[in-house]
Length: 390
Image (cartoon, rainbow, N blue to C red; front, side, top):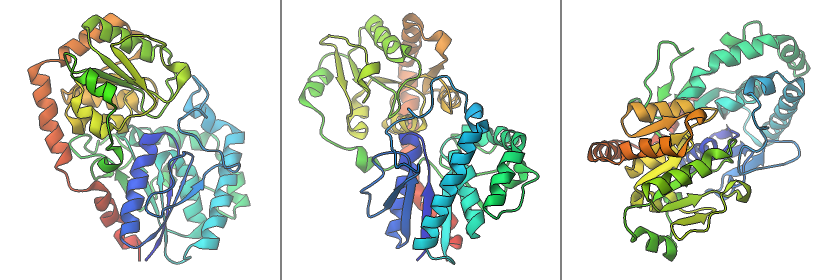
């Protein structure tokens, strides 16, 4: 039995795969601790939850990222670097007090590599880097350039942690023993331009946690004409205020009923119409198969749940991994992707109209069978790291 530390931050698409991996590891008899910034990370099969931030703040979205702020600006901010190294000290203390010094593995999302890999280095434990979407592998050279640009600051803090200086941060980022891609190879095979190869295992998710009862008024809308369109920005808040309004107006052009899902009241259009139902949450695994189309933000979690349901996808993408995810569903022939400057109701409506064809629906069904027939991806992750678990 080993102690496994899972580290991630971000939105639901960054959290839920780690929860599922943790569940599988727990089922194999290992002690699992999830360190994250999101609520909902507790109560899963005895996994321990530790908030990543010193003040214990948690969130259900990426609201901690200021609007229109570039990620590289945040990474170069000395105060953020200092906060990351303070987090390193906290996690180091936690692991030292509670975990088996000779049998602990640290697994982190790419977005937490600065903390995860440093902590593993401090303790001399194996480190595994997991990527929830191909974009995060693609941006590794940018991470290396960013770290090299602030090497003096980073190495000053490393000295305080009794770690040697890093002269080449690209080489440092290549160190993890295992590098795992949480998607199937047919979705994103290894690219020669990537900094290193990853082991693609398939989409990691647990359909059971997204099964639930559908409200009666939704059932009534399902029985009213053509299948409705689901509009959602996943667990995150849109940074572009046009996301929901454009989607709703496009559906009005097409004469389609709408189910709009977002937990954030301040971004949801205040429409009063019998053709629009708005909810803060509905169980996607139960709802999606009844949808005609989905308009979403391109988040990887929403993408693969829609793919498993076999429905066409209209991705209105802005920032992070979303444009690359949207481009991939477009190349697969199961959706369309539009950047913000094309978020106009008539353009979105025309793109959706091109998805409502028998050929696209057939491709969606075929790919759904391919996605859902895969072996359990979280078990594959556990098999890959098994040699590190003692």
